Amino acid sequence: MSDECPDCENFKAEGSAFCGACGRPLAGKMSGKRDHGFVGMILLIVCSFVILILAFELLTIFVNSLDVFDFLSDKASGFILIVPFPQRIFSLEGAVLQTYWIIVIAIISSCAAYALYRFFGAFLSSGDAPKHDAAENTAVFWISVSLSAMMLISFAVVFIMALFGYEATVPSFGDKTEQMFLLADAAVWEEVITRLLYIGVPMTLISLAVTGKKESLKCLFGGFGMSTAAAVFIIISGAIFGLAHYPGWEDQAWKVLTAAIMGIFLGYIFVRFGLYATILLHFINNYLSSFDWMGIGGFGIVVSLCLIAAGLAALYYILVRISESKELIDTLPIFRNRYTENR
Image (tube, rainbow, N blue to C red; front, side, top):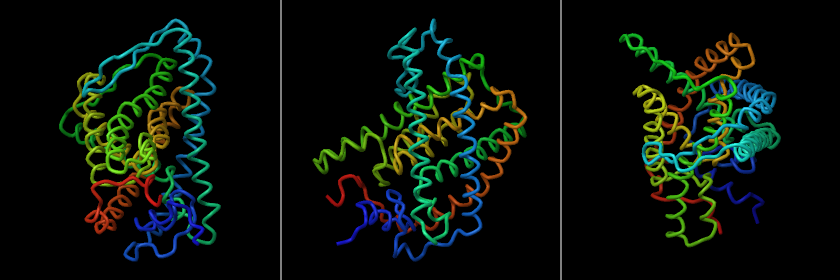
């Protein structure tokens, strides 16, 4: 009997060199898959860079957590649903809001710890195989690729707007302490009300109807694998995510475009890896202001420029992967839930 984990065959069928669940090398990967070589090594360096950014952002949130905690003592915060525009459903204030802040920090920290555990675990399981192949099926790798690609796309949109005489402005979200709370809260809550609600819930209902298995409930938190149905919900959730940013960004249409693109990246990562990965990507993106908050804004500019430059390799890699996956896309199942497969 094979000692492969239940997900090994699924990742092998997708043409992966390594299992995205246990990290072991997979024999017999898709023969048409190219060796990403130099670009893969660049993206592995980008992963290391993003891990350092994440470490700094976590340091920022921990160092300032008590200041935010005190700030929230006499504040209230509304929580929204997007239907398709933001609608407030309830508010928290005082001690309850402070408790929520502690929960947000715990969630983000747990997501980071789990993602890093899976990333370094893939390295330990890779043996003599290329390290960039081992990293390729981890959330950290795709978070790094997605973040770099999103930074480049956002820069390109703003640059094109400037060429036509339009200025992209950023609305005020309060002082440093308020921003820390709002942006960390958004990384968690917005993922729940977009990815979980608009992808996880419908995929769970479909899986329950198709399979009737209790494992279908795992779909709520993503990681069930790509299918035609999942792709449709990714696009829907991305569009809703983009539209939701229109009123909050002083009715700037450019933000709808960039947020929708970000929503599609987040949707793909949700489907492939799960909610923990989308929360982490959202947090890293939102907390890039950490360098300003910690008094080293100049270094933050350098970090942003490096990510924009890395976006060239990231977009190239994404396009190559799409071209390599043409056969898989043509045969993409209408519905898939890897949690109920091999059972």
